[in-house]
Structures are given as C-alpha cells and as structure tokens.
Length: 167
Image (tube, rainbow, N blue to C red):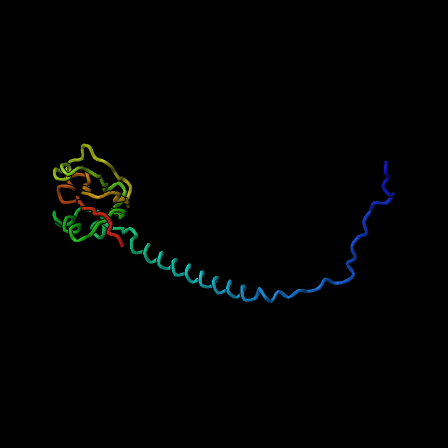
C-alpha cells in the first residue's frame, strides 16, 4: 500500500500582486447599440402608453344625470322623455338618479308597468339616493317612482341603450 505524504495542504494563492486590468474595447459598440435600442424601446413604450390612455378615455363610460338635475316631479309630463330623446346611451354607461332618500325612489320596470305607472313586478329597486344604475346591455330600460302619484305626474323615464361604437 502506498502512503500519502503527511501534509496534503496546497499552497494558498498570493494576492500581493494586483490583477491585470483588461479593457474590453470590442464590447463598446455593442454597449452603444444596446443603449440606442433601449432608448428606442422606451420611446415606443411611452408612445403605446399614450395611445392606450387616449383610447381608454374615448371609450370610457358616461354618467348621465337623469333630467340633468334632480329626480323629482317634473314641470311637465314629457320632461324626462324629452331629456332621454336628446341623449345617446351606450352599454357601460350609468344613469345617476339624484334624489333625497325617503322622498323618492327608482324602480326598474317592464314597458307595460312604465306605461301604466304600476310597479307590481319590478326588476330592481333603488331606495337610497343618489342611485346609480349601470346600463349593462343593449335594449330599452324603463324607470318609474312609486311614491304617491308622482309617476302619473311624469316622474318616469325610459332610455334606449346601444352597443358602444368601436374607436
């Protein structure tokens, strides 16, 4: 059998001499190209963010304050129908009914209930004002109040909701 020497420790490296500095001049053009590409990428990203922001503000939902003021007994029977006929409603928009809680309400009803001013099988009810109603799909939406005879006095509105046109 062979025996190993008594000391098997390698000699530690000497750090007394400084390591040579190597200039990698061949990488300078690559670094410059990378910086130019990086700047182009940043400008492109900034441009895309601006376009995205501009387009999102264009297709943003609109809040329509019903009657342009308060949800209350109108000055004429046709007040709210005239108001809605002069507006354009799109899917994603909101109707905002501004009223004082306890004095008025808003009920989403069928066309027949709208015409008869009766809310026997309403779809939704809003008793706390102001009430915001999201227009989630295309079609006709009908709203009345069932406080007293306010609906018969004209406190009712319908809106026709269209698909949002593409930008």
